[in-house]
Image 1: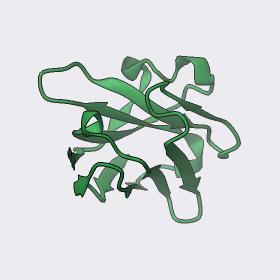
Image 2: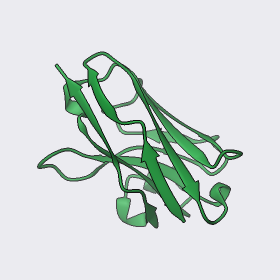
Image 3: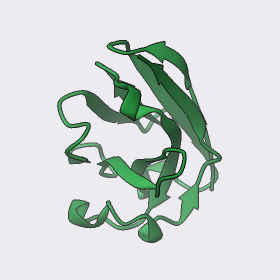
Length: 125
């Protein structure tokens, strides 16, 4: 399984970006998907997760209400729509795939089997 995230860039505070993660290899719909991020000097943190069929989602408290995760299984792609961006959202964003179906466990990065190389999001104040 190979993952490739795209869509990062520089945006002003209050702006929006949409990240995409294209997945190739084994059956995309077999995996729950997640987005994580790592800011400079900080540990990687969970951002959002979505179930295999897209019916269930989970968000970190810091992004709930501002970010939306979605997926298109026909296009083998997962998305992260980010609105009302803040400078503290600045980070490298990673998409990842897991066979774990329980959303309460998606915040654990070590349960994700496959990772993409990340895309940088910079939010200026």
